[in-house]
Amino acid sequence: MAESELLTRAQCREIFERAERAARAGGAEVEILLGVNSFALTRFANNTIHQNVAEERRFASIRTVLGQRTARATTNRFDEASIRATVAQALEITRAQQEDAELLPLAEPAPIDEVDHFCPSTAAATPMERASTVAEAIRIVESASGTAAGIFSTGDSVEAVLNSRGVFGYYFDTGAQFSITAMGADSSGWAKASAPDRGAFDPLALARSAAQKAALGAHPRDLPPGRYTVILEPSAVSDLVGQMCFDFSATAVRDQRSFLTGRLGTKLFGDGINISDDVYHPLQSGAAFDGEGVPRRRLKLVENGVVGQLARGRPAAARDGVAATGHGFPVPNEEGEAPLNIVIEGGSQRLEDIVASTERGILVTRFWYIREVDPYQKIMTGMTRDGTFLVEGGRIVGGVKNFRFNESLIELLNKVDAMSPAERVSGEESFDMVAPAMRVRDFNFTETTGF
Image (cartoon, rainbow, N blue to C red; front, top):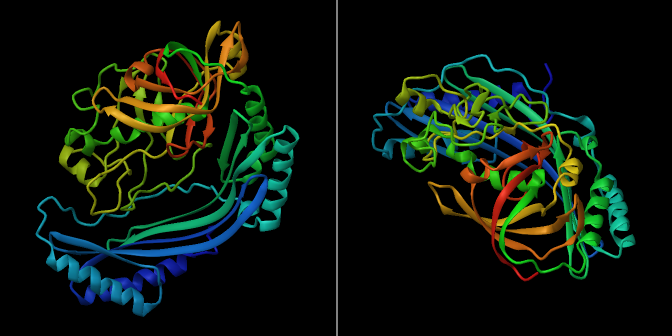
């Protein structure tokens, strides 16, 4: 059985046994979350590499349980004295808590499926390899008379959860990310990708895309605000639709802080909208267990426009009399749970074909500064950036100045009339998702931003 050199299964067990001995001496049960992250980043701006950093972070988050009381304390040291001191701190805080009638016993063990998101070449990436790639990317942007900025990061991590009832969840992976912005005199272009395998994307292709967007967007025209057909690239879909995913939480619905309150089982979106949470999807990544070591289940959040399943941690599941879905956050917490491996099912048209079939519209690369205006109608506001273009007669004819928008996500997902195949997307305003490009009718741009 494979494991990470950062923290092996045997080391996890040894650390847990230290915590359990100390907790047992205090009459408590114990749960421990362990993690180690090795991360390296090369940052560049003004066509020059200006930073290379590498760090290793580690933590042991220890929760003790005494009857109906619980609390947590954390350390970044794994030696016996530090673990014993952290358990003592957790016990002290636990004894000071009021009893919680809804507090559940620690989770019982259940089979957890293995997921493999580890790539040796990503873990072994060197500063020189990243620097060489960045230098080539900068040359591509420079040759198009642009200025490049961005990051190239690589790393590996491991996380585990163990408790006194016998739970042992263990997961390790790698991650690579490349992001680049190409800036011209009055325009900019952007591209970004991430994956466990750094060979799954081409940083130089991303650099060429960003440079081409900056060149195409030069001398942007000033269009009036209004309702336009928009073509949202997958990154823009992720930025925007990703804002609603934390609403698919049974706790959020119960607390009436979700726009799905009173709408479960209703047809809220268009026929072609299918959204799932699936850690086992080949383009997704992440642990197959939650903050209490409960195995993650696949969820159909939206099926043909109908609101379907919700994420449920153990407390929410106990309240509702159903099985937990394995999406809970570490206890104690106020948020409950959320789906974190979103997959939006796509269509069959390539992005280029969607553009070619659009008589007039706006192509949006991505959004930023997204904020919520109306929580129940899920009206969001924000701005376009780094590649906003006018489409006429089925082709991109030039850049336009950026817009501010006000748009309901409910209405947006009822106005989709074309989608590309879904792909892994690393946005700026949400976590990594699997999402398609979308063409949306009557998207509401309220004003131009002046640049």
